[in-house]
Length: 183
Ligand SMILES: Nc1ncnc2c1ncn2[C@@H]1O[C@H](COP(=O)(O)OP(=O)(O)OP(=O)(O)O)[C@@H](O)[C@H]1O
Image 1: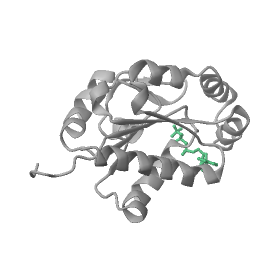
Image 2: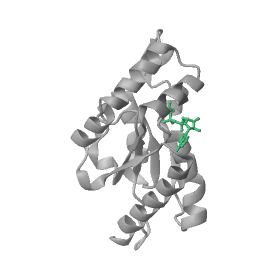
Image 3: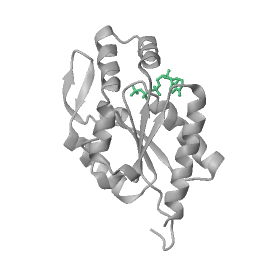
C-alpha cells in the first residue's frame, strides 16, 4: 500500500433471500464511482463464488442448492477481505465471517406481502416461500447481524419500493464518505 493511500471499507450486504441484495449491490457497483466519486469498490456475490469455487461438501437435494462450508468460504475470502479493502460482499448469512472483515454491515428488510410476491414471481415452491417469509418475520437475519457486529457498523435499510433503492445508495455512500473521511 502507498503511504497516504485511503483504505476503502469492506461492506457486507445481507438479508433474507429476495429482499433486494443483488439489486442494491449492482447499483452500488455501478453508481458509487460514477455518482459519488467513490472508486475502487468490487462486488462479490458469494453464492456465485461458492458454486464457481465449489466451496461446499454437500448438495441440498430438496432446495437444489449447495450447502456451503463455512471454513472453505472463509479460507477463500480471507486474502481478499484482509488485504485490499473496498469489497462489497453479498450473502444471506453473516454470523460465521470474522467480525474484523467489515467496517459497514448493511441489513436489508422487506415486509412480508412484498417479499411473498417477489418469491412467488421467482417460481419458488410453497415450502421455500414460507421458510423465507418466516425468516424475515422472525428477524432471523436481524438477530444474526446484531449478535455478530457492533451497532455502530450496522445500517438497517428498508428495501420495499423502487425509490428505496436510490435512498439506500445515498445512505451507504454517505456512510462510506464518513468512514473514509475519518482516516
Ligand atoms: N427496493 C426494491 N423495490 C422493489 N423491488 C425490488 C427492490 N429491490 C429488489 N427488488 C426486486 O425484488 C426481487 C428480488 O431482488 P434481488 O434478487 O435483488 O434479491 P436478493 O436479496 O439478492 O435475493 P437472493 O438472496 O435470493 O439472491 C427482484 O425482482 C428485484 O427486482
